[in-house]
Amino acid sequence: MASPFFMRKIIHIDMDSFYASVEVRDNPSLKGKPVGIGSATEKRGVLCTANYEARKYGVKAALSTMYALKLCPDLILVKPNFEKYQEESLKIREIFKEYTELIEPLSLDEAFLDVSDCKKCEGSATLIAQEIRAKIFDKTKLTASAGIAPNKFLAKVASDWNKPNGQFVITPEDVAEFVYKLPLKKIFGVGKVTATKLHDQGFKTCGDIQKASIRELRDIVGSFGESLHKYSKGIDDREVCTTRERKSISVEHTFKEDILEVKEVAKKVEKIFAELKYRLKNKNVGKNEIKSIFIKLKFNDFQQTTVSDLNSSFELSDYLQLVNRGFKRKEAPVRLLGLGVQLKTQKKVSKYQLNFLNE
Image (cartoon, rainbow, N blue to C red; front, side, top):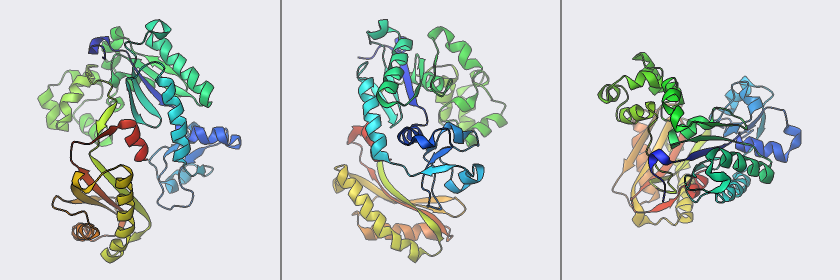
C-alpha cells in the first residue's frame, strides 16, 4: 500500500529523446547529427521526436516534417520502428520492477515510480533514481533523466530541470520556495492557449496564482482552475496508478493531398474502418462494449469537427453517414479523417499496454 501523500517519494523517469537515441545507438554514423523520427516521404508527416542536435534548430515533436526540414535542412529523417522501441521500453520497465511495483507508465519513454516503501539505497529516492539511471544505461546504452519529489506534479517538473542525462530533487522542505517562482508553462495542462489567457490576466508564475481565488481561476480557465490552484501551491494528491480505464479507440489517416469532395473522403472510410475493426479485435473489444461511434475531420485550415452517434450498429454505412454530416458543416478540403468508438466504462487495461497499442 502506498504511503500517505505527505510521505510519498515519487520518481519521474523520462528517457532522453528516446526514439531518436535508439536509432543513433543502432546507427553510429548518426552520432552528432540532427535526427528526427518521422516519415521521409509523407508530405503530411509529423515528427515523433528529435534528438538534441536537432532541437537546437527548434525542431521538436509534433512538427510537420516539411516545416522541420525548413528549420534544419540537414535534418536526417528516420522512419519510426515502434516494435524496437517497445522492446527497449520493456527492458527499462524490468529495471523499475527491481525497486517498486507501483509503476505508472505515461508512454514508452516515461513513467512515475512510487518508491516510498523501497528499502534499497537506504531508502533514499535520490540514490534510487541514480541507480536506476545507471542500470538503464548499462543495459540499453541510453540515457534517462529523473525528477524526485513528494508528488507526481513536482516530480514531472523536476525531471525536465537537468535534461539530458541529469536529475533534480525537490525535497518537502523546498516545495514552497520552488513553486512560488515556477513559470505557469511548466505546469502540465497549461498549453499555449491557457497560458495566454492567464498571462492576459497578469498571472505568470505559481506565486501569482496563489494570490487568486479558485472562483477567479475558474472564470479564466474553467474546471481546470481548481487543479491549477492546488498545483500552484505544490499540492498533488494523485497516487501512482498502475491501470486506467480505456475510454476510446480510434484510427486516423492524414492524406498526402487535401481531398476536395465528400465522395472522395468516403472512399477512404472503408480502409480506415477495416483498420479500426482490426484494432478492436486485437484489444478483445466486442460490439457490446461500444457505447458510440464517431468520426473526426480536419480541414485544410486545421479546423476540425467531430460527429458522433449513440445509436449505431457499428457498420461501415454508419461511418459513411457521419462523414456526410461532418462534411456539410464546412464543405472544405479535408486533410485528415479519423474513425473511432467510445467504450462503455467497465473495461480496464494496463496504461502501459494502452500507450503502446496507441503508438
